[in-house]
Image (cartoon, rainbow, N blue to C red; front, side, top):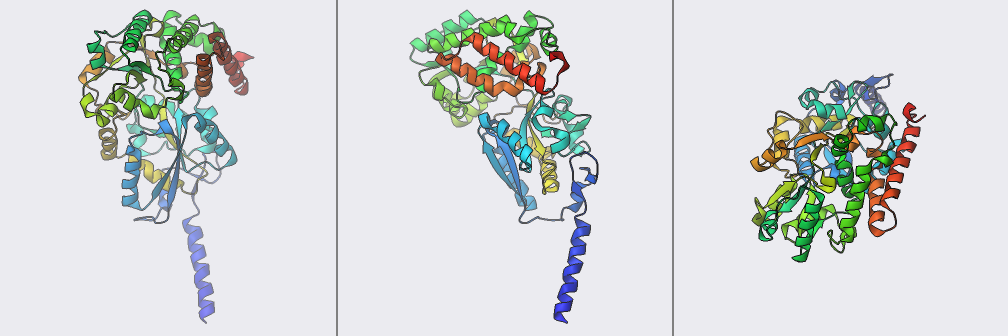
Length: 448
């Protein structure tokens, strides 16, 4: 009788499990796919024990201050669901994620630098990502943020950072002690660097180990190229102009190479990392670093004596006078093939709560503003005034096709240019070749 009762109980539990687990998150391609508005119905009420979400990202995909991990710990305290962060080097993440997506082994949540031009080629959202369109928080994100994670009228990710703006962050005391003014032309920039170098200080800390960093002056000057050649972006996208023929791009590469040869990046710049920049600027060993305005607060956080001692100025390579607006940003996607998709949705909803958005901004010096209009930005008045005074345009990798997918490759080419293994002309040839290869893969009619 005991054995018969145990068998009946086992069968009843199996039926109950099938009834409770019959709905699952799909990829939006039809069949028995369930939308995100109902997916959480399968989640148990109260805390979920023994559930761990894997979160794959690159180093710069989440703030280095650890605020996302802090929020994940709060989420675990509230729900019992753990989040395991799997952080890869920036230079490896794109290729690694592609392999994982193709093999069906992608993490439950993955971070991608998302923009409208490369979103599909990078993650194929309709195949690999949970449709989040009906989530309550979607309407609260800024429109420019939604545009970067939208495909075929559906929203596939959550993101947080406002548009990225890159400036040379500089040590005001060093500039003041040496009688230096903010440079606005390339020749003025050279004079500033030479004066700083002669004072025994590294003029510019260049994080060459992070291949994307040396691309910022080249692609971040895109709006300036467009200003010099109105209609340039459209011509490049229609393939009526070859990118290797954009004269100012080659000029800026030549100027960057000259800076390296003159020693303005220091002796060991090829081994420099982004993570070490705060120390180099905070200790005064280097005078300038190319980064977003939030970098100043990061330095102040570690070096209180640097409070209000960092200013910003526009990249002056090529006599550039236009600020590049980069609406793309790191975005978090949920793997539609994940068995834990319903719990990942809970995590996204947790992150999108107003109090948690505010916590992210208050505890993250890397982001002075969020792409959530309900949260007030925290830029210093000095920065706001300077930024508002500048002409702005769309950064090249957001406005021109087949630039963003080759960002890391371009960075490696620039490093080769610094060492003398490549010329600026060869770097430009490679950029053009890779664009053509990408266009062929995408079957772009403009390249036929």
